[in-house]
Image (cartoon, rainbow, N blue to C red; front, side, top):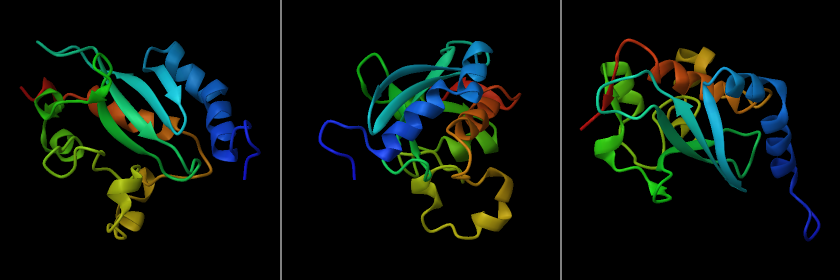
Length: 160
């Protein structure tokens, strides 16, 4: 337990990971950028492939309260500092639609990196082992997967 005024162990580790090479390398490549951190939340924008009438960046508001345990990422509107309206979520092929699925839950992404999505999906631990959150790694494993989705051919832009 952290002393009064001192950051908790999860906060210190998350802050350290944001300063480390993998996060900085992705930021230098233009894959993501840190918008804000007010622990236990962090808003990180992820670059998206250019699509008509769609933003160049999508923000996720991460809940990292038990970091390095799995975070949860919620699509976020940085302009109004609130959850992103479902009509503005990324759309595309079945894979993109399945992950960015406001019909399932507007507070999380439906992927094995996400703490909320992992609940009740024990089969994912083996079926999608390469995409399950690894507490021995850092936040960039989640960011890379989302960046890949937003830059694949099947991503078509906002749902509209």
